[in-house]
Image (cartoon, rainbow, N blue to C red; front, top):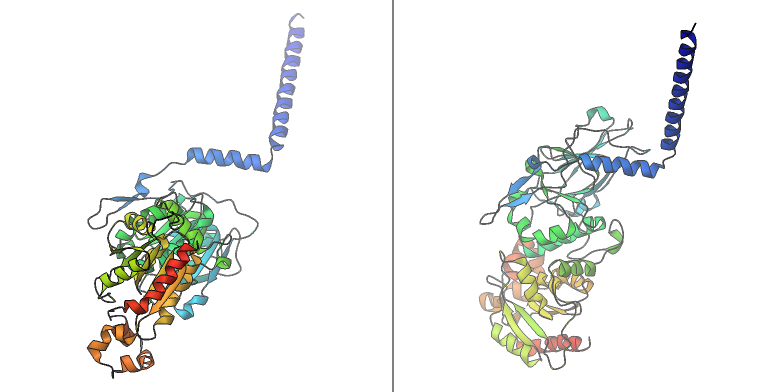
Length: 471
C-alpha cells in the first residue's frame, strides 16, 4: 500500500516537467520565427563568412620579363558547391553587340547565378527554374574588333542540370576583359583599356574581381598599371588562362565598352554618370599627383613640356621651339616618355607642367596627368590629318578640363617636301592619298618629320599662355 502513492507522485512530476519543456520549446520557436528576414540573412552571412577562407592553391604567379614575381589572386573563397540563393526570376543576360559592325566593342552583363570557367573561357547563367530557351553569345574581351583574342562564350542555360558545379564562390561581381590588340601603345592602354575599365568597375567602389584573359600577350602591362588596377579593385586579378576553377559570382561584366576615343559618354555609364574629369581625378588620387590646378603664383612662369619622339613624327628643330615657348612667357623643357619606365614617375613629371606640346602620337596621352585648366597643344602632321588627330585627342582633352589647341603643319614645314618634291601627289593632292587607303596614308603622313616655323607657330603659344593667365 505504501508504494502506490510514490509511483503516482513520480508520474505526476514527470508529466509536469514534460509539459514545461514543451512550453519552453514552443516559446523558442515563436521567438525565432519572429526574427526579421534581414536579421536572418545577416546571421547567415556572418556564419558563411566565418567558414570561408583563402585557398593558396587558387593563387597564381605572373612574372614579366625582368620583373619580380607578381602575385595574382582574387577574393578567392574555396567552398563546396552550394545552391545559390535565387530570386523570383532566372537572372538575365543583356548583351550589346551594336559596335560589332564598326569593329568596336561588344559586351554582356550577366546577372544571377553566374559561373565562369577559365579553361573554357566561358561565362554561364544558371537559371533557378527551367528557362524558355538556351542562348549563346561569342564576345571579344578586347574593346576593338578584328583582333585575334580568344572569344568568351556567354551561355544562358535552359535548366540547372547542365550547369558546371561551383568550386569557388565569390560574394562580389566580376569584370572579364582581355589583354591584346594594341595594348602596349600608350594611347591604346588608356583609350582601349584603362578608361573603359574605369567605366565598367567604378560603381563597385573596389569590391569587384578582375578576370583577365590573354595575359601572356603582354604580362608587363599588369605590372605597369598595377596601381590603377588596385585603385579600381581591392583584389588581385585572376589569370583566366591558367584558372582551373569554376567560379560563381552574382554578376559578371564580359568585355569592355568603348564609346569614344579617350573619353567617356556619361549617359552610357552603368550605375550612374561618370566623366573624363572623374577619370583624371582618379588617376591623380591614385598616383598622389600634387597639382590639381595650373601655376597661379605671382611672378612664376607657367611650364611647358615638349614631347620628344625618337623615330618618326620628330621635331627637327626642338631647340628653336623651346626658345619660342620661352619668348611667349613659358618655362620650357624637353622630355621623351619612356615606354617601359615607371608610370608613376612619368605621371608626376607631367603633372609638374601646365602645357603638353607634341606632334600627333601616343605621347600626347600624357595629358591625362596635367592639372585641370592646363593646355594640350597638338601639332597635326601635313596631309589633311586634322580629322584623325582631333578625333583622338580634341574631345578627350576638353572633357578632362583642359584647353585643347592644335597647329596644322604646312607643306613647307614637312620633311615630305624635301623628300618628294612639290609636284608629288602627297604634297599637291593629299585627298588622293586618302582615297588610296590607310597604308599609303600611314607611310606618307604618319612617317614624316617636322621643322616648325616658329614665327607661324608663335600665336598658338600666345593663345596657350593667355589661357593660363586667365585661370
